[in-house]
Length: 183
View 1 (cartoon, rainbow, N blue to C red):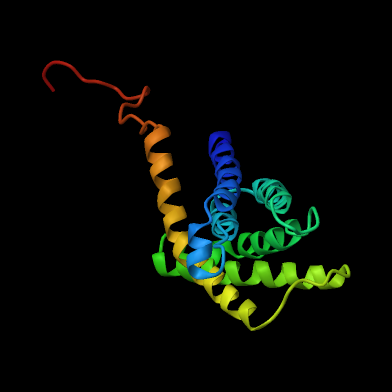
View 2 (tube, rainbow, N blue to C red):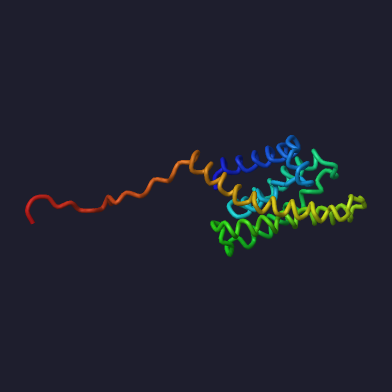
């Protein structure tokens, strides 16, 4: 993965966080806001290096916390944990399969808010929690599961559109002898 893919990932993360904050129609309709950072972390953990996973967790988590009532930095560690767990096992994951993307998005979108909730309890905050929180977790997990294959398709389209393919090696060998005339 080259540097422009990393820039795309980080730019999409910041845009996704601000899109979630600016457009609240889906939040009012479903009763919960779909978080797009875990699906993006799934893509990053499968296709990028560990430094990009850490950068996405830091930049995306801090941007998310700056627009929410979370203490600054509380979302960074859950996002990094999700990315680390997927990155470690990425050799075993069928990353081109839509079903695998869906399941990874479902798991990541469920684990990240639960870990954030546990970290908030650990540092002494008392977040709102009730029966509605279970509905919100279901909506966030299902929305993240549906958004993950879309995220993979968007980045595949970006790579096809903006990246050049490597040139195939020529069949001509410099040390080949060419015979001319009659044999």
